[in-house]
Length: 201
Length: 186
Image (cartoon, rainbow over the protein chains, first blue to last red):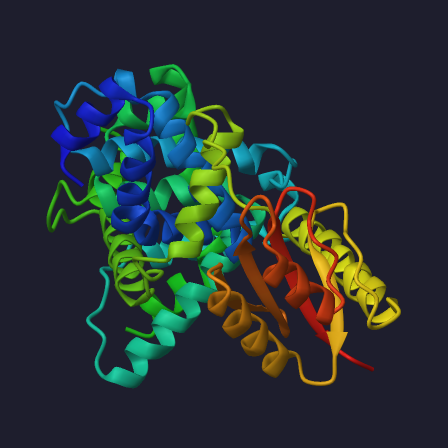
């Protein structure tokens, strides 16, 4: 969807919003639904959240100045909505109680992490690694969705500290602490994958 | 001074390449796995009219869009009710007609005289022919299976015309405007 069309529709309002909403849905539903589905793991809830995002987009359309592209702006609204939704029921598991991993295991993970990522030697190994990663990631998402999501957003979009701080509504210092927590939690939940990726390489 | 968390973050975001550090290596591995996973996930279909309509309805419910205009449409229930009343009226009328004793002629509140005959069509044509022969402008019609005759009778009513009407059992209309319907005899 063109930025100019969006801005005009926002300015004029009324029935123009209807056609603009339809355009938004056609253009961005797929990508937003994938983001939401990844976070919520429920197709209907994801669909609902995308619609909620589009409604919020129009409620806040006057704040879109057009300096950035439309999708990143909409995506940031969507991600705030995702975080809000995840925070409603307190699903997060405290790190201290989560996997029962011993200090020895964590030490071993840390040692394994010191290795370079080996190139996957064949397709079977790559597939095993990918499946293991998805399995571990599922557990990560289940136990600590906010941390897992922020990691995936950093990887996919190259988010900066400032953007994450804005998204989370935290101070720069608190954001740094949050990112440090992300790293620690990843190390715990991706331990099996780490061992497969680094040890057997 | 960058610490391990900074290196890990930068590598995860893809902003550093090949940094020989354990934090960087794990972050790059995570990044590669996440990007590989993202590439394999199918996106939902782009266009879906039902989904769009749901969205628009939700926007209206939220007050984002003006309330939908209500289009005045012919309402079938009302239409059917009117049709039922009309049908009942016609049915009653027909019922009343069939129960009328033949061949008595009588005036109706609507000013239409009715008679019965075994062959209404033939009687209609005969009447029209006789009235025209007497100098009266007469025309015939058919309505709901009944044969009708309309005629403007002269004033005063000529004897010949009076005799035609009497022969067929028709009472002369008070206003000299003949409206006659011939129903089949039971």
